[in-house]
Amino acid sequence: MEKETNRQIVVVGSLNMDMVVQVDRRPGVGETVMGRRFFTSPGGKGANQAYAAARLGGSVSMVGRTGADVFGEQLIRHLKKAGVQTEGIAACEEASSGVAFITIDAQGENNIIVVPGANHRLTAEDIRLNADRIKSCGLLVVQLEIPMETVMEAVRLARHHRVPVLLDPAPACPLPDELLGMVHYLTPNESEMQQLTGKKVRDPETAFQAAEALLSRGVRVVLAKLGENGVAVLSRTERFHMPGFQMNAVDTTAAGDTFAGALAVALTEGKSLAEAVRFANAASAISVTRFGAQSSMPDRAETEAFLNEHAEGMNP
Image (cartoon, rainbow, N blue to C red; front, side, top):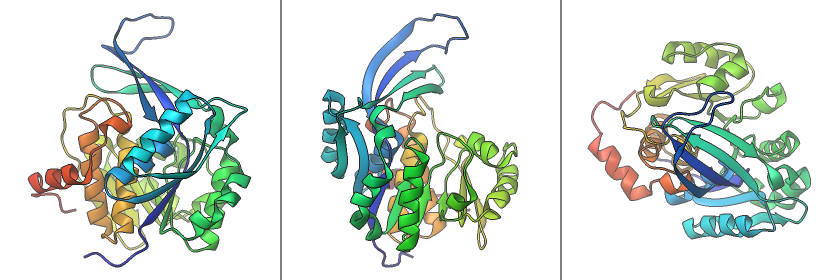
């Protein structure tokens, strides 16, 4: 059952132009392999999550930085086309737009190298300039492709104004207890769970064990993403495993970002935690069947149709 909530989502994070190469297999050290296809696609974890949420019907604003260059113009134009409010994105004269070099193999698995560029020029002052957006929203969404001090400023501001925070802890790095103590929803994958807790995650049971360590550090809800094995969810009042959808994956690049954006929409619509995770699982599952980051993300109608087709057996 949905409850009345503030549906405005603010995403503070990165914008990158992705440079994507498809290969049969990823090269080893010192090895050269032939690629099958090359293309560019708007990306960056922050922009991906904002785009996914907007595509799924969310009311979304983004705070970030691009370079004063062609890539920056393209990135902003693409977000606007999806309905994202981009007034909080500033162009930086001192650095180029962020880029990501992505290699995707025949199984859809990837390696990514990110050159942050203007993303690392997003400062605490930028957060203060956008304070009105953050303090009046229903959910703040952040990731870790921008400076940690900027993440901390945004999360502290949200905490001060009692705005819940969704943190996607990627790229993985050690996180201070102060930050975790201000996070309502944490969405790590298996490797990020291990980085944060020192515990190897292999299945839902080991995910629950690792999640306990994060709850003890102040996180309210841990949603451990287990790929095709679904999501293990743990809070002080709920514990359940939501199975994943079995899909023929061709590109997993933005699966986690699609999950985060979809989860943000469902939570701000007042859905229960189980309903929100099911919705996010569905959107993420659709995204892995297509190439690209933002270009792979489904809209609301497609996601709801998918859920209707896979209605049986999806209760935790």
